[in-house]
Image (cartoon, rainbow, N blue to C red):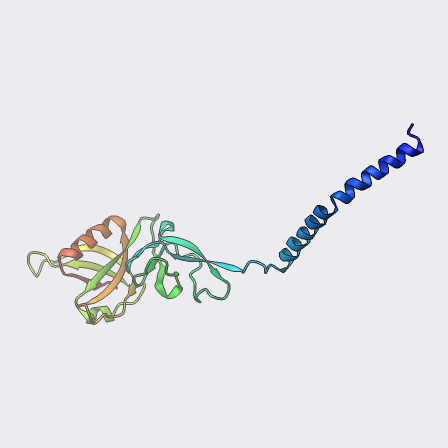
Amino acid sequence: MLDRSQLARRRRAVRRVVLSRRRPLAALLAAAAVVAGLHELRPPPPDVVAVLTAARDLPAGTTLREQDLASVDYAAGTAPTGLAGDPVGSVLAGPVRAGEPVTDVRLVGAVPTAGGSAAAVPVRLGDAAVAALLVPGRRVDVITAGQRSDQPILLAEDAVVLAVLAEDPRVRGRLVIVSMPRGTATRVAAASLADQVAVTLRD
């Protein structure tokens, strides 16, 4: 066992060590207090809202797919109104730029599908009077002129009108978006590039 003198010497040695390191310890504790204070004063991260935007430039008549959309965080209160909750499968009524939020006024509804085999096709009609008779949901046949005026070619039968876009004074005709089977849509799109396309109303 240690006698009293040995214990006293040890206590003095420990005291000297503590006193020699008092300033560094005090500085370390002060720094820790400053860091804790800054953490308490730091404002909380701002609330954000996930907004679906166009991942690239999209033309009118596009049937939206997941790869056409990108999620972007907007600060709470800065997101536009009328955001589309789930626009996948809906059709664009007009062109949308990359990064533009997808809102309800940009959409004309979901494409009617038969086992997922339908597609939307923009068709420009030269006869404004016919376009004025069309409303979403109306069923039409899409035709084009054949080699003889009395023998038109039927391109698509029983297509569904999705939207009639506003008249653009810079271009001739009205743009109408119609839904039809995917295979037929390809033929109609190709024909509309080379020939005049028209629609006839179904009962």
